[in-house]
Length: 324
Ligand SMILES: Cc1cc2nc3c(=O)[nH]c(=O)nc-3n(C[C@H](O)[C@H](O)[C@H](O)COP(=O)(O)OP(=O)(O)OC[C@H]3O[C@@H](n4cnc5c(N)ncnc54)[C@H](O)[C@@H]3O)c2cc1C
Image (cartoon, rainbow, N blue to C red; front, side):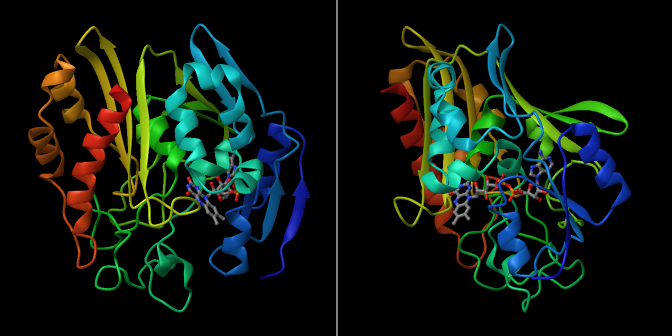
């Protein structure tokens, strides 16, 4: 690990000031991703700005929805009784991630900022445009079993690994950020980005910005399910995951939200499928038509073609589970 400087801050302004004066600095929250990246030489910040003392741990629900401070722990959100009652999809997605010990350290802001688990990104002896722009994408013609089937580019086929982010994309969440220029809100579906020609950029957070909170609007989804398919039953990243939130009245789906994880550089919202589901009778769903439609734009690589069949089955299973 390289030498680095360390600052502990206790206000948003102080944290932003330290970052502004030190362009090579990184915020550190739970450290469960950043410290690993530093140990492997993938991340080399000159200074860590510890934000754990910032007053950003609130979990509150009001008439407009749920607001979660960026420093709320994953486990505190998932164990909050009001969140469990009103946002079960979010709770299921958080609990599908990592392990209990990690969720006790990991923060909400850190979770959505976590970097890809592509093995070429983590191994500094291999080419990776995300880690070292211009060095090439080792995964493109390498071992690409975990990789993207939607929205990839010839520069990067990595996937975004956060389970929670898939639920937040489905639930139309918003990311609240602060910088010396003021505050702004980023719709969750615009927070992460596709790799294009600049895969080193995971998201649309600008330099000098701090995530302060995530807001999830009130919803009336009464059928929810987060399904994660992985190599082990626990403590493994998604091969494919599906977040489903439905508002069902009688036999009819009145509104639907669907997103997939493990398939793209960002949570993959399935708006067309949502439209197909809306107005359908629950006993009359045509999963073949729905999933064929979703997968028609998929592009696979040597080792991940199985994600098409797996993805189709996972979507059908997740909707069925939500409807139970
Ligand atoms: C073995 C293992 C298994 C895991 N399995 C899963 C899994 O199955 N599913 C899953 O979703 N996750 C999984 N994770 C990832 C885990 O959820 C993340 O490491 C964690 O959520 C990151 O949160 P943190 O607070 O520790 O972030 P940190 O490591 O502190 O920070 C991560 C990044 O976020 C930035 N950052 C943090 N807070 C802010 C903020 N407020 N504003 C701006 N930038 C910020 C940091 O600068 C850094 O770049 C796993 C991790 C490990 C180590």
